[in-house]
Length: 396
Image 1 (cartoon, rainbow, N blue to C red):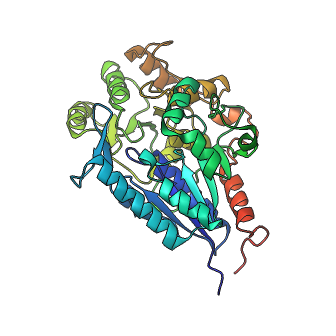
Image 2: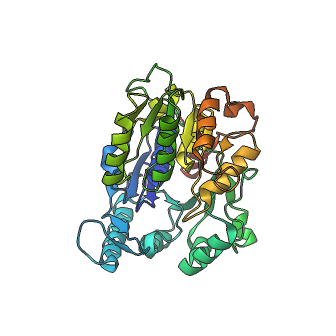
C-alpha cells in the first residue's frame, strides 16, 4: 500500500470572532509551506471562514455555527436546532473528517475537549489508531489563573489534556506569561509544553498598501469593540486639529445599529476618519500605518510586532482578562503603550494624547526580546520532525 501524503488537521475553536481561525490559517500556511507534500484541513465554526482565501494545499470545513446568547448560553446560529443537537451534529462531522482525512498530526486550538466536548469522539478514534501526533495549541494568555482553573475543572480539560495530548505548543514566550499557571497538570505533561514564540505575519503580495499618513483603529472582530470605537471618534470630534487621520476597521461582528450610528458621526468628520466593515487583507493596512490603536487580541498583537508598529492597546476586561494581562506584560517589556481604564481612565483627553503621540512612540523593535517572533519557524520545524520530513524541505 502506498504511503499517504503527510496530512495535518486543525480544529479551530471558533464560535464567535476571528482569532482562532486566523491563527490556524497562519499555522497551516507555515507548515504546508515547509514541505510541498503536506496538506492541511482546518475545521472551523467561524461564520466568516468563506471570506478568507487559503494558501495552496490548505482547505477548510465549515462546521454548523453556534451563537452565544446574552445570558451566556449557546444556540444554533441558523439551523433552528437545540444546542445539544447542534453539538452532536458538529461532533459527528469532526469525527468523520478525522476518519476520512486520517491526519498524521492533529492541532487543537485552545479547548482540549472542543466546544461542549464535541472533539472527544474524534480524539478517541485517533488515539485508537495510534498514528496521529495530537497537539494542544495555546495562546500566550488564556485568563487569570483562578478563573482558568475553575473553567478547566468544569470542562474536564486537565484530564483530557493528560489523556489525549502528546504535547502543547504555547504561541508566545514564557518570559511574557505562562498560560497554564494554576492548572493542575502533571510534571510529565509540563515537560512536553513548548514555548514557540509569537506567530510572525508577512506582508501580502496582493492588494495595495495605502501611501497617505494614517493610524489604524481596529477592535479585532468588533463584537465587543464599540466602547473603543466610540472613544476614538469622540477624540476626533473634540479636537478638530487631531492627527494623523485614521482608518477604522469595525470588524464583521460589530452590530449594524451601532455601525450606522458611528457612520453618521464619521460623515461629520469630513474624511479625517475613513471606515470599512471588514478587510481580509489587514496586513496591508497594518503595514502602511504610522501606528495602531487596538483592543489587543492575540492576532493583532502578533501583527503589531511583525510589522514593528507603535501601538496603543485599550484592553477589554470582560469576560476575560486575557487582553489586559497581555497588554500590561507587553508594556512592562517596552513593546506597547496601554490605555488602562483603571490606571489612566478611558477619557477623551487620554485618547487624544495617545493618538497624538503614536507617530513618535517607540516601535516594538526598540525592546530587544530574543525569540519574540520565532513561532511559525518553530512550529513548521517541529511538524517536519513529527512527519519525519526534517532535512527534506524542498524535495520534489
